[in-house]
Structure formats: C-alpha cells, structure tokens
Length: 340
Ligand code: PEP
Ligand code: MN
Image 1 (cartoon, rainbow, N blue to C red):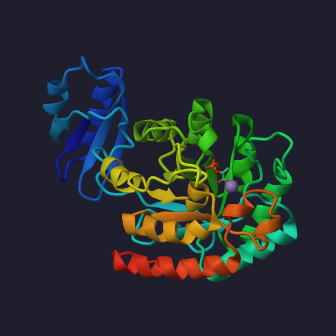
Image 2 (image 1 turned 60 degrees about the vertical axis):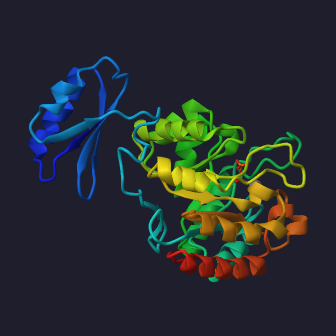
C-alpha cells in the first residue's frame, strides 16, 4: 500500500507514519514529490491495519498497490524519474530530452575505442557505451578486455566528457566496474540474477537494466524493484528485443512495451534496436519508431569498421550512419514534443 500525505504536511507527520509502518514490521520508502509526499509500504501488508495509518495526522489516504512491484510503480511515484548519468555535460535520461547512448559492442583496443568515442560525441551522442566484460554464447570467442577495457573507457570519458555505460556480469565485478563506469549495465542474460541485482542496488551508480529475452513486463519491473529496494533508485530500463519464432531478425523488438512501461512505472525506458533487430539496415528505422513510441533514450552500437568488429558487427552502424540517424531521431523527437 502507499500512504499519500496531505499537501503541506510536516516532516514530523511523515516521520510518525514511517514509525507506524516499522512497528507493523514492514519496510518504508519515502518519496518526496513536487506536489505530494508518499510513503510506500513494502512487504506483505495483506493483514495489516490500514485504518491505523489512515487516521494519523497529515495523512490524506491509504491506497493499496495491486501490482507486485511497489516502488517501481507509477502509483508510488506519479512524476517520471529523471536520472543523471554523470560525465561533463550533465546528461540525463527520463526528462524531455532524448538520451542517445552509442559506442561499440565491445572495447577492442585503445585507439579504436577513442576514435569511435570522438566520432559519436561529434555526432551528438550523450553517453558512450562499450563492453569490457562480454557475455558470449561461445566460450571460444572474444570475451572482452576486462579491467584493461575499463581503463580505456575511463580515458575516453576524460577525453570526450561523455559518461560511460558498461556491463557488469557478476557480483564479484561490481566494485571494479563501479570504480570506472558511470552507468552499470545489467545484460539480458543476467536480468534474473537476483544477487547481482542486489549487488548493483548497493552502489550509487545508475543501472541500465536490460530486459531478459524471455522475461515478461512484470518480471522486468520486479527485477528493477530488486535494485531499487536494495537502496539504488536510479534504474533505467532497456528493451533489447525478445526471442520469438521469427528468424529474419536476431530478436523481435516489441515497441509496445514503451507505452506499457510508461503507464506502469515512473522509470525511464531506453530502446536498443541493435540487439533488437541484429541488422544494421533496420536500426535507423527502429530508432525513429522507438522515439515516436515515447522512449526516453536509444542505445546503439557504432563501429568504424563493422565488417571486422570482434563482436556484433552485423548490427553496428558506421559513425556516418549514426550521424544521419541522430538527425532523423531529432526530427521525430520534435514531432512528438521532445528534443535531443
Ligand atoms: C550488449 O549490450 O552488448 C549486450 C550484450 O546486450 P544484451 O545483454 O542485451 O544481449
Ligand atoms: Mn552487442
């Protein structure tokens, strides 16, 4: 349930609600909105006395939350969350501006990464992506440069000012990756790795959470809930395609999730049309479509020589194609009342 406080309630009244919630052996999560403060009550509250909370001074009403996710729900936090990514230019995701995250699938070496980082910055990207730890289906293929890759990403941030988004694959990598990265990516294969979700939930770095390729919307939001209830409110959802019977694409990109997430949650949602299609020729059209559908950001893979990329070349845009795509996305953004 959520306890909605009256406008103009005092901090002491909010504290009294928090104490009452704790006495019921439930967890509290206070959200101070621009208009209202609400106290989300977390835990099994089915047999608890709602009236006891309703009658406390300063309380407007107590509302049950029917969805299984609570603090990820829009009911507890009606305004959209705006998440700061770091870097020198104050990049954010979730506000009126569309956030463009671009870079290679993996960090291959220093000179190639720095070259592509400058190219995406030049084209107008707001954040740089690149994997140092790579989840690969085939154990004999390139697994990423590990910490060396993180050092290269940190240098690219110094040189371009762009915040860096990179994947953390296991709980023992969390502190290491958090030392270098601005945003911690949880890959699709790890969306159900609840220990890892709790691990990144204990950091103070924003988390880009990719949807598992067989996860439902409900499971996706519950994965976000794990991170938030562990203490980290800065979760960015990322739709990257799901597995279906179709084989003309690597994954099927279900853009209907964008309005569905907007209705269910206050968390920003980014769309990844590279993994969502697997084919570079489809990526610009799906970037435009994602922004038209209401996405808060786009994540794409960019490589200066896709034919020789160590990972995911077939779905990588060249820097020139990315520069064209960003202009097209800007036009769609204007048409739907947003901007880059
Ligand atoms: C990636 O972003 O390079 C990646 C491995 O993504 P996903 O986890 O969505 O497959
Ligand atoms: Mn990739």
